[in-house]
Image 1 (cartoon, rainbow, N blue to C red):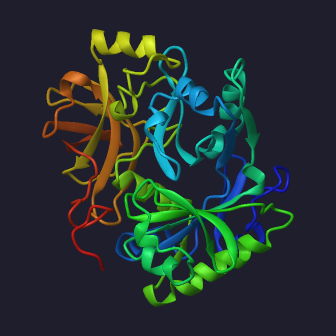
Image 2 (image 1 turned 180 degrees about the horizontal axis):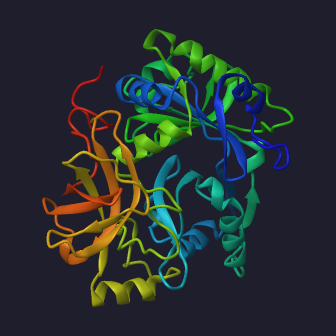
Length: 381
């Protein structure tokens, strides 16, 4: 949102209505009404996030699928047009360069959506490894606005202004459509654990933001009956943590591998080759020495990044990478990397909080009851 980087399309809108903070070089909304009410409106109804600060790269051409399958660990060849896939890119040592979603818009046209802090790094990594591939790589980040509409009433909200039948867009699917009279790509993905959509507004720059502003206001109007709220980075972080989703720079980085991070499902060893494959195969064979776990606090206290974790014998076993007080569950939760031998669900640990040890328990992700909350919920508000 900074002028230096060209900003994001809704900079002036957010400056009038939100408490902002600098994130990845952009001045972004941290909260509007507050982190807790914004968090709960997404869990219970619907909220909208401006995520235009994220990186977006188009890869087209005859070798686009081959290039992607070389630089990512997942297998993009199984994704049909109008499909999407979560994946990671690794360096030669198996360390995670970034995690992201790849959208297959057409047979030879892919959109890769990166974390905001890795925009330049990821783009350069793909360019570096594209030699010999017949592809065109285009950074479209500054010319595409991007919103996330999340929560159990997200579909009902967007359907009011959508030309497409949104019930026919399955999870991790996408399609071209119109919202009001604005051309968009709609995908059923998200970073909150809830059902919801990400909306890409094409050909919309910070100097010509009219379509982005128009659509933002139209979505807020469509969601009025569901008490929609604009949401900032604060709620986005607490929501993704409750859902057990990683934040790059906290829970994953180039010093962690997808196997340590319990992201095994995005590593397809049956592929002929991808960057980092040999290192990951070696780690798998030798055994994982540490693993990412979820910790639910039993005693009072909020785990925070950097806090030490001890086993039941009070020996240090790891460190918190992300932690918060859960607005939904009303107790402290956190992610940590601990020794693999201690990483079983149900094991008790102690987190060092202000020079005292507070008891916690290792739990599975998500932290909430998936039958009551999240995209798998049995009932909708």
